[in-house]
Length: 363
Length: 136
Image (cartoon, rainbow over all chains, first blue to last red; front, side):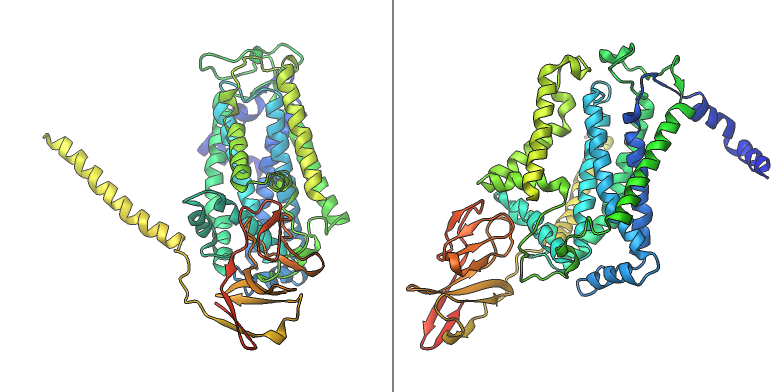
């Protein structure tokens, strides 16, 4: 039966050649490591979000009068609704962690450098869309936490003169967060962001295939210790085969991702659900403790510390711009961060600052 | 003018007009202009708010607070923090209004005391007529 199916596919799509090209003859650098699997982990994380999101949308009602109740019903009445909601919520947090870790390792290995600048820019844009997924999805349960966190986030553009109020009304669909905001955030979450993300993902993967998998600048000899000056697809003729060498690493990390996700769901089911996330939205009462998710705590605390709103938000945008276009700003040819003490020190200072701001924001 | 150039110009002009005639309604559709609802006055009894007390009301569908300040009389202000739109809370013991989101504080005139709010709370017109407080 299996052979018949294989033959059927072989005749129509040239299955053997596909497997040979993409699996058995595909070679990867000998010094590739476990951190090179994080892109795949993020990809699987997105798939989990898509599948659990489609399941949730079957029961969720995007209306201010019903949204909270429908989410409660998903958690308590729909068979295994709790599982899909938990997978979606825990998965979104783990996904952002995986993407951040992926970007950090790409940064450390200098793999944003020529010819991979566009791959980096696409990756950061995907991170921004992932955060937009998080923000738009945050409002959907229509809880106190989601309502007021969204009020704060949608107020951010008001720092800008002339267009600020317009942008805020564009996001909210009115002067305040209301049922209209819920509808448009739902539209954003399920019908605007997914195709945008899909386009970026296709471009990202196409670029990786076109340019070739990079190695690491550490350890064994690597011709990418100095960036290329002409287009040449990176190949690893003397490297290890993709299957099983890198594939098994990827499989291990994906399994690890699932283990962490299900460990949180099983042993800390309320980890991502503080008290305000279980109370229906009340537009007349801001809760005493209103904090964004962990990945936004650092910018949140920064906004708190900088007395001028325009200055604070402008600084955030500038930092984001530097992050996106970093490959074009970093003119040094050396990829190995261990040979670059200044960059290494800056990276450590940034990480420590982010950790302190996150811890401070959490208090 | 060559026919090809004319064609290019026509495509450019009609293309721009078509785009604009689609883009403008889309922008207006997505970002309706601010609500221009008629101001509705709110009438409260002085007895509802003892000295040092407060009452939260909806003024034109927006949360507002009326405070009876010791020695200074009544004042009405918007509850919407001028920083990022959370609602301030009146803390009687400390004679101030505090925003729970980013810890901005305001005095009972609505002026910023500390924190990131860029401007004072919006003051609402208020007058006292006999035993009545009229906001708006």
